[in-house]
Amino acid sequence: MSVAEAGTLLKIVSGGVPVTLPTRTILKDRDVKPLVEQLRKMGGQDTLTHKSRVEVEEVKGGSVVFVDGEALAIKRDAELIPVLVNNRSLDLLPTVTVDMGAVPHVVGGADIMAPGVRSVKGDFQTGQFLVVVDEKHGKRLAVGKALLDSDNMRATKKGRVVENIHWVGDSVWDIVKPA
Image 1 (spheres, helix red, strand yellow):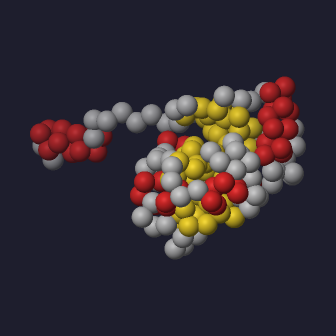
Image 2 (cartoon, rainbow, N blue to C red):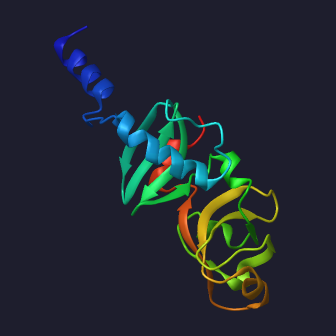
Image 3 (cartoon, rainbow, N blue to C red):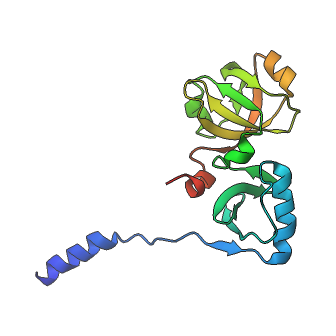
């Protein structure tokens, strides 16, 4: 192999693009206890203890909380939001089902509009977290915050009804998505 060929080979293999690996910070015991208490209040996390290994990874607009290697929540402004892979917590939340025409918009980060809502399951208040699913497969698309209570959301025919907080394809999803 000549020097020219070796240089080309090296260039192709390296690609010339620097790769940065995500960094997680392991929390100290004094910081773990209050965070574990907050996670328990989120629901579905009764088995957590203050002895759990808690790590955080910074993302745009907050940080992802991992407990014993499992992604559980996004922490933004002292508020914990369950991530889309946290089935134990998401199973306890009310559900808003959207039509298939709304799916590309929801996974693009758009808020959920009343005309796209097919059904509302569960009772909730304004400001409570909800899971947004598609009508065809029932797949979880997003976690959002209710802009109306459940009765008003069922009755309204226009306007925004759910603020999209975390969706398939956002910066958090890139970290927590299943392999």
